Length: 432
Ligand code: ATP
Ligand code: MG
Image (cartoon, rainbow, N blue to C red):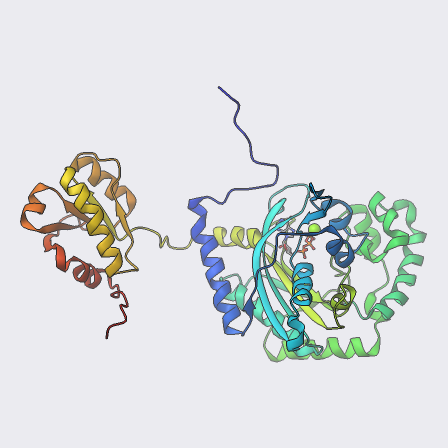
């Protein structure tokens, strides 16, 4: 016997028993984005490695140690996308979409980071992403946050808290960088190894450190808010005003810097206290320099990403959504003729009622065995086809929930009868 092949570390299967929760998240996402006029787009899972290096930045966890990168047979340097913003920014430039001026986009899919796997932190995970290009004012920052708030609310996750900060412009950040450098240099010997390495490259990264001792030192570091330029301050205050007007509670957190280099001005995170250490369920910010940095015309941008696994964990804590996937009807067939006729009948019913969920018995078995499978399937009705029924030109229709009611229904009336019983519309044939 050969040994079995295990999945890669930090990579998970999403099983049929979990799919209802994932589908609830995905369908709610589609509805909420449609309600705000955002358009879906899909970008590649693989991109040139240089795209992520140039946008996410050196001295970040992602670029320093988390990317799945390889050189392919044609000597191309390729990376599995660790996040979506860089790919979307690349795509709007490559496809000339910015000529339209303004874009409101969203996408959903798998991301890859070689992190240490733990609950809520995986090597393949999924994100919902929102991005807006071409809007410079604080109104879009507010809309982006409102959109994420509504999605969380629609999912019943109103317990998450909004943390907000402004990183200012690259110029005001440079001033802050000098102050930080001075402060951290004074505490250099107590910093962890990563932070010491980042001290001269990008000391802001140290604020984002998850190392306990470093976090102590970070607690005493100067605030970014004190170095903010007046325009960034106005932008931030206007955003806070919009949020207050919309009734969104927020907490200004001067330590919030985010783990990617491309952010400018607004940054935010939605944080829950029900998931232990992996507490951020959604995070984002403004990236006014990114498009130009990737070779496009200077265009402001803002976006966020929500971790789907973490949201699914929260939804599962609330209890699984009602399983909508049980079949309506289980077709029981006994005898060779009935089995042949069964396929024809099933296909005709699917033509007549496209929303009908019909499970055909496969692999034979006597009536008793087939009824057992029908019960197990969760179907509401069993449709019975045997020699007797074929002789009468009618199928037996049994209500499996009350276990008693049974009626005979002529084959040609079955679609209509099931439509009435299950509240299913007839197929749209184009005839009125
Ligand atoms: P963290 O500080 O937790 O590492 P991050 O700042 O690296 O997060 P982002 O790049 O902002 O995360 O990604 C946005 C969201 O995607 C996170 O808030 C989280 O919900 C989710 N996410 C990020 N990395 C992972 C991962 N490895 N596994 C599962 N979800 C993740
Ligand atoms: Mg991370």
